[in-house]
Image (cartoon, rainbow, N blue to C red; front, side, top):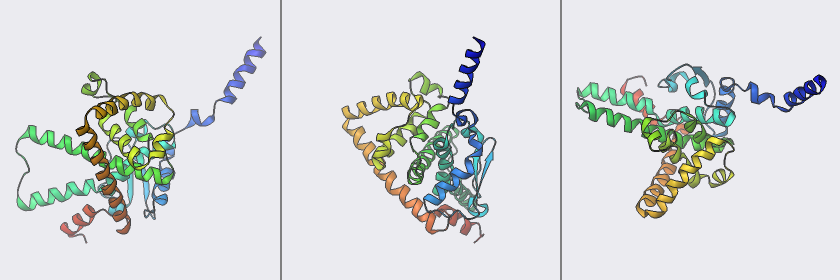
Length: 267
């Protein structure tokens, strides 16, 4: 009996893929990152990928060519598609020039001695909204980068919905990062329908589809919502493709990077 049980244990151990137990997202960042760059024709010479703890700061990418990726986000990545989702989001922020945009605004405010808002509540709400818009913009760029590099962009939805829901998302029965995830779904459906049709095999994506279907049903019943969504994805398509193209022609620099360099006297 003991021999039978031992043989069964060995058979099960052999049957379990080694990658399932030993996959380390942090070890795949550089390889996946380089693939995202080269497959999209983005200058990759001297570009390095660094794994850091906590929040990331990629505001100096145009000069140091380092893409920082947080262990906080990588904790939700269980395969190369999901690592690509995390890395591509950071590249999306870099390509859109989000950090440099903030530095340009700060320089202009300092030069004119002005403040955008003196109302703390209004400033907080505006900052929160702006942050969400930046994430959505970066997500859309990430969908393009991943699709062109052969990764499954739906992994972005998986990484987002694996995270912890906010209080308001929870009481409304929404998945974590519901708005961003739905935006990725809509954009993928518009720009890469074959990728959407192929789907993504995991429980997180299956659960998200339950939520997505309720949103799609609501849109069918509300033509204004449907029209608004259609208009947004078309806008995202045009702007994201344009941003990537200009980033490549500038040799790995966004328009905001160039503007900051001029204003700061570094060029």
